[in-house]
Image (cartoon, rainbow, N blue to C red; front, side, top):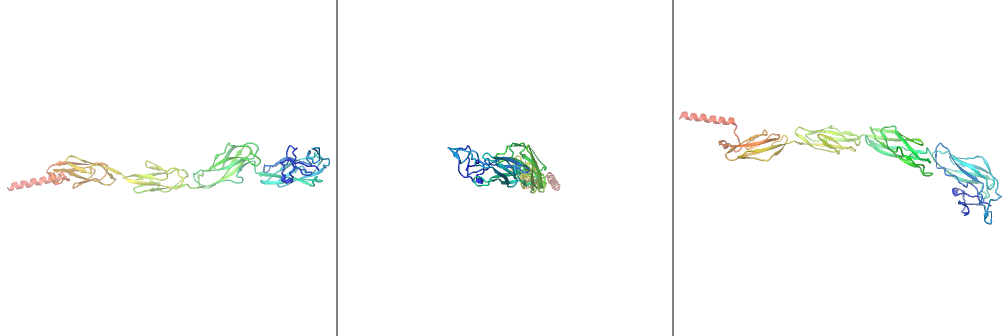
Length: 440
């Protein structure tokens, strides 16, 4: 009996071939008694676009020439006992078909049938079987030979992936920018260029991917892909949806995206006593935006500090840094200070004798001490002298103490008699002196 042969491209498990290897065959062949079938196998269909029809060529062979168990002096040939057979070809599995149809006569050693095996798949992964049923049976007693078929249906040969998905950005603050990516994949045997990407909602923008060149498919089931980046930058609050249009040199695609805009962060102003901050209510600020506040001290006070939210003070305007979270701006105020400078002439002293820093609307006091035999006169800073203590009122100013000699010194070392009172005393003395003289 004569063996029929198969190349190793054929699914061996489908044919139940044995392990007899014939070393004189250029490619590996395995044989069993009078075994015939599909020596070239059927190539895997790989990816096929849904809605299209793809066909591959193969052959059915009545037997395999040149591989016979009937050998003479080491030379094996075709047996004349190989008969004519009627072969019928069928397929099973979704979307598969074979041509020609009907019953075909296959004659003798060299009898072959050229077949076209086709598939028009739905989306998904499909397997099928190509079967040749013959009559009369093969020499091994079998009446059929079969081979596996495989295809993956895909919506298009350029796809936006993950398939059947979309970009969901979740929540983002108004003004915040969030980026996500998806892939554009090429299942063609040629390169594809992304010419343009457009989005029908201005809260979404293209970050990357335009002009990308996507190489051909890498192998049967490995596409080449390029990443496309999309920004979500909500300008208002609420749910948002958009359609992404991707135009390539092979075909155009659409993808969808969605996101939810939420209010920006809150900046809360706070002012201590003796001043104010404006606006004085919490402010909603877009993500990465800034807010400005006017800080105003009361009269006689100054801005001591303004802190919070990474800001800076220029004059009386405080501007925050970029806001990415809730924060508080706090202002404090301090009293203005006046400098009171003491000055003492000769023949006396004033204490303290160094310039004094005095808070706004506060007073300070100096002790004025004339030398023996002298009396003091003190002026400046709208102050008053009580005993030998001189108390100022306010403002940058100088307290000046001068000292004079004379009988007036007996009235106290730190006290000066106003001129009017002195004249009255002198006048009374003169009157008393005249009366005493007249009585004498």
